[in-house]
Image (cartoon, rainbow, N blue to C red; front, side):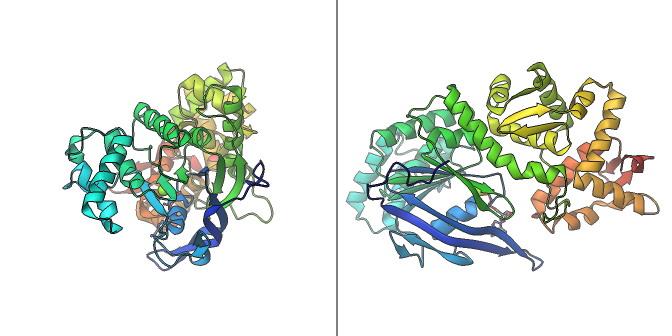
Length: 446
Ligand code: ADP
Ligand code: MG
């Protein structure tokens, strides 16, 4: 982990986009302040690819929009080539996860549109669009409409539309995450090829991703964002040669390191409340999106691998992306069934016991772990135990969760809590009445 200037000392560093102490606070519908970005300073320089890596909800898209000048920071400044922004960043073109193409325009018209917006004459616009379409491998599809194209081809149009303006900085917000694995891998390699061959008419690239391997595959520097609120937790330089091979020990070691950084703080908050830390509540410790079956499977594989192994190796064994493992690993750590250190996962005594137990015992062990260590599950059991009829409407918990989550995320939290509570036979959820009902004897698990 070195500062970004390492290795370039002596050469002039041309900074294209720079953020200085940027914060962003949203106001929730019920009037509370939601701090999303806190004191973010960063720079994107000529000739580099920077990845902004963070978990879902850590504020990556918000930060990208601030840097692109699409929304204003609550405080701090964003500058393009040294000039503070007061409107959209003139040096930036953006590629979105959702492609964001206009369905009633052809491929060529979609690409030309970004030039028209910049006042390029029609004839010149047509020629430049054709060149960009060619460059990105869409030759022959100029007249096609988006709905006639596969996801991968649509995203190629997204790239052509951004590249055609020859931006100083190409911004990409999870551009590959709506594509299937192979298509994504293809497009990534092509992008690296264009970048390495200096064919892409861009001077720098900033990519937002929640995918660790993608960040290590593409970036010269990785900025790791923490969540709630988003802060830059760490910065790493990746100096592996391109194209990069995921299977090399150096690549896997870096993935493990980034993994360790990304999970570092959650690990300690999950374990115990330490003085000076925020209290452990359903909003400060969200439940990872993990099923009990997935969790049990992960522990079994880990035990089969000797009880301790690097995350990248486990992902390989499972043919998973490392990020697919994140929720399972987070859940195992939260419940005390495993620990992580330096990107390695180790099963705990409780984890071994849970894995070896018969079904009834495993349910009891899970119930105790969840009721003690998963704040939302604990809160549900406590609240139900405190009512006369041991029943509560879902709205009660949704309101509680809305203090820290938007509605969609609050529902996802409840969904996980329902699955965990059902498995541990702590409570049930009656979908007809939208009601939680305590199982007899569940308080014993608290
Ligand atoms: P990421 O891209 O890392 O998943 P986002 O930047 O989309 O994260 O969102 C970060 C947080 O900010 C989330 O909790 C989200 O609900 C909240 N948020 C994003 N945009 C708005 C908005 N316009 N108003 C209120 N809250 C928002
Ligand atoms: Mg996002």
